[in-house]
Amino acid sequence: MPHNELRKDYLLDRWVVIATERGRRPTDFAKKEKPQAKVGVCPFCPGNEHLTPPAVLAYIEAGGKIEKVKDEDGFRHKGWVIRCFPNLYPAFTPPQEKADKWEIAEGGDLAPAFGHHEVLVESPNHDEHPSDASIPQLLHVVNAYLDRLVELASKPYVRYVSIFRNHGLEAGASLSHAHSQIIATPFVPKIVEEELQASERFWLEKGECIFCNIIKRERESPRFITENQDFVAFAPWASANPMEFWIFPKRHMHTPLEITENEKLNLAKILKTCFSALKSLLNDPPYNYGFHLSLDEKTRQYYHWHLEVYPKLAIWAGFEKSTGIYINTVSPENAAESLRKAISP
Image (cartoon, rainbow, N blue to C red; front, side, top):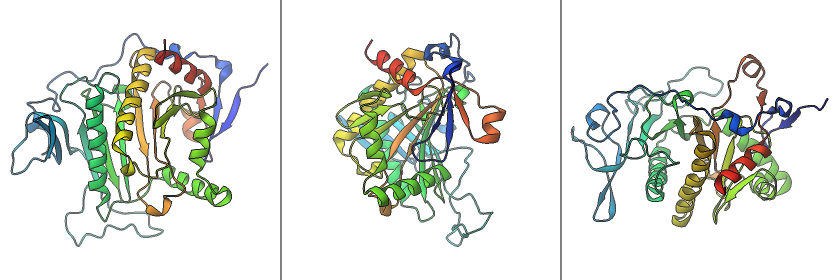
């Protein structure tokens, strides 16, 4: 009897079981009916700005150009194409006074959750998700991500900024209006810290970026999905999730803050391509995505920012939660092949 495969992550000390003997095809995950978020007044839709905190950033179209504004003195801007505001129920909040001690003591096990937690509404149109959005609208989203990254990274108590998206009720989106979230934290999260350490070791040993090395290999592998002038998408070798894929800039950058105008456009284009394919293939499945990036200039030579996409197609149960070993019933090779076909039917 053939065996399933154990695969180790490129960098992390994490093993995944690719359970090919369970033999699930990607299309087996397509759902005829999807759970729906609560129906009612959407606080993110135009006209309901008073139901959210004041915007820290809004894009207003005026004369063919974008004006960047924020709500002040109780006033709420209308006619926006992008709107970002503090989360009404934040996980992290900024220090209230300059005297607040915000640094986490080395070796400590208790600290205030200082930081920021924001909601970025991606469109005034309720259902304009990445799979359906126009390229110009996705470009607004990319620019807004970068604007907030610049602002939040400048805070003295912020060490990391997580930009992520939950799509669908099963993936944690309680509201169905197209939106992302941004959380700024006073420390670098464990997974990113492990990536930083592993990539630094590789750079010291080999003299090159391990991510650039991975991109080179995966562009020629059966896990390759698609690419354009500036970005490449592939299913990672040790995918923990069925249909997982990653998007990398081809040019080496440790932070998306170095992205050029043309690269922004091509990021918007590859987002549209990949999420349209995912929706077409699996009937708009729930998913999460998150950027991995560095704010530390010292990591410039060896870290490479990227976006990881995790379709929410399986349930991690007792084995996964108690061992940290994940079972994936769709090989990344099959996932990539299906997505390639969905892109070019």
